[in-house]
Image (cartoon, rainbow, N blue to C red):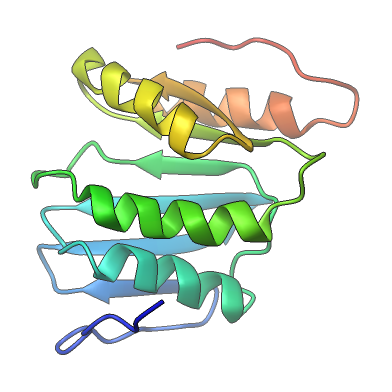
Length: 154
């Protein structure tokens, strides 16, 4: 896979990494065993897989992990090549026998169609769309509870 042109993108790594600028960025952090992936504005397609790759290869995010993907402030168009690049990476990194729950937070249920498509692109993950961030986090916590999954739809 070719390395993306990340000119102007500076990764800031500690417990998190952010690629982009003040208004258009992707960030990845892990808090309480949940990956928080936030996409704001229109960060540019190549920055998304670059940021995910950096987070995994630098042990900011260890797979499998429940993930909260917040696209509530995303204003760009969907770059399907970037989505496919992330899928290729994660499908290699994720074990076959451990489903990885992913909760998407978006203000509109129109994103539901995109989430349905993502279910096919990321077959090793369980996907759910929420409008409320707290409900999404509750669902992820239930899915990662060793006592078994529950249902906290939002």
